[in-house]
View: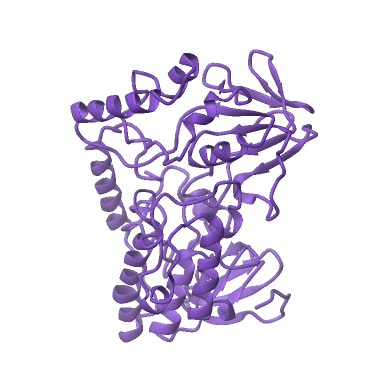
Length: 431
């Protein structure tokens, strides 16, 4: 469905934000299962959400496609591909659309900028997009995941760089030609790793940045954890010829408990550092302070001249995307204000004061520690079976969790976090 300005709001049972795994699965369950009048408002021009935007070189998932897919029989029974790179995932979403008829209930290029406040009098949410579309619905489901709002460091001279620069979450659909160019990859998480593997094979010079990895699962036993790190470091260090690069990339002493910030799966990432055209910049020792017209400057005054910069700097994870949507509670207070002193949810699915709003694959949930589609299906089925069917069957207008229930859930999350080797760190996103 195209996006056009309108005088009257669209009347719905459910408004779903986001046309990725979460949004599509929930649309299928609500529309096809419960016969609720439901539509997706998607910020992009097509289905896929994360996998529409993330077209950077080497983009892929770290598990086989039979697992990273829907468990819907009519979808998987006619799907045979098993190599989930970004292009294959794009084809997968097109296949899902053909089978489930997703697009007919999507409004694309409709980024939500205001939502609420929820009206207790009629039990409705009002949602508005930046291009003037309004929708009114009993249920609001922001199915945008926890890595939606990109993070760009506050460096000086952001506008001064005269070359090409892209954040990985808004990568152009057309490939960026790096042949014969000097390129910088800022970030060494999974995204930076994937880009480095690809660009180092074509660029004249590549400058990956050495810093911390992304958050992830944690282990419980210190002795076993150290043994695992020692084995992994030994095998990885054997692949890096330069001793200086070896100690920067995989030091003998673990910088943090192994597994709490898991090493990303890779094919030949470490071998790229054996090439003369690949330089490793230690931004822990000398952080980046600004961008210049010619490149990047670190705090020791050194300038690295480059033609292209890839910002693999990640996201304002978990709450950043939700905060941008302008969601208001029953009293007109924005969610970002309600969470200023800490996130509070009930079972990672609802927020006190925001009736009939459900958060699949978001905060205070297994989201960052689980296989995305599998975790999404569990949460969405729970919402459908326990909540929607009960509300519809018993003619209940809305459901709103109690602050006491949410506080108990937060305490449970903190208790689990403190059992791990990451005690003192945020291991459950949003704690």
